[in-house]
Length: 338
Image (cartoon, rainbow, N blue to C red; front, side, top):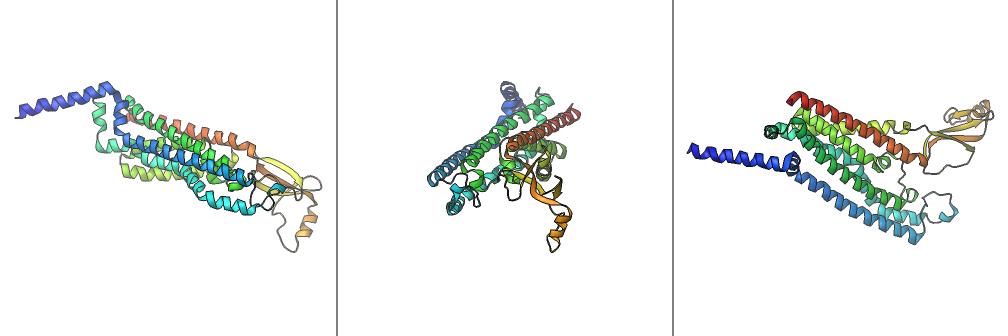
């Protein structure tokens, strides 16, 4: 009886090894992660279609009511008396737009939590990595297959969703939607930023899983690290490019699309007096007079023209960090598995 069992076991092992040789580690990774892949592709298709439809509806509404570029408070004479239509537009499309924005903002954390953290932790926890490593597949080749396919799927899904959101954002207009590029959520959802940060979260999750080797614990730690990285990017974002200092007469305005970092008054000698130097109160006039404040003001700002350069700089930093984390992953695997 034991003699009959042994050939069957050997035959099964041979078939497994043969399958691995024919398909290679990449095919094995695909088989292991089909659910994740189909989930990402489903999210891409559903989200992309919804955003495209919503963008078309917003564009049509703006054209029909001629309120493109109008905000609730606008100096454009063309927008006078159109605040009601702007409010109706935001009521009709604002909620759906914010949901799409929230998806892009949370996407890196979701990728790290549900794709990155379990990627290596699950196999190491269950011991299934030993099967792959004993079938003529070296540890570095195994690792490359484990990382390459999820990274490609994440990049495609994140880029597609980011493109759909960008279409919505441009269709609705910053002013009319009240969704400016410099807001914390707006910047993080636009352009290359969510794509790069998703790849970074994937790498971070994989490294955490490799070190902890427990899926649930790796997911918890990855979520915390992703939140810390998001906060760090938000804190340094305003320093990615030097701000522009603009002088103008009192009562002048800069576009609402400018990210204002600071403001103040100009003295008669041309010096800049930061706001708050003379606190509001009964003695403010005497204070302003003592500082020789003139009729001008100044703003420290990031104009809208700096948006895309800043976005690409932040994305580049995120991709560089992702590459660095990936190098660390390879070093750890080489040390642990040879």
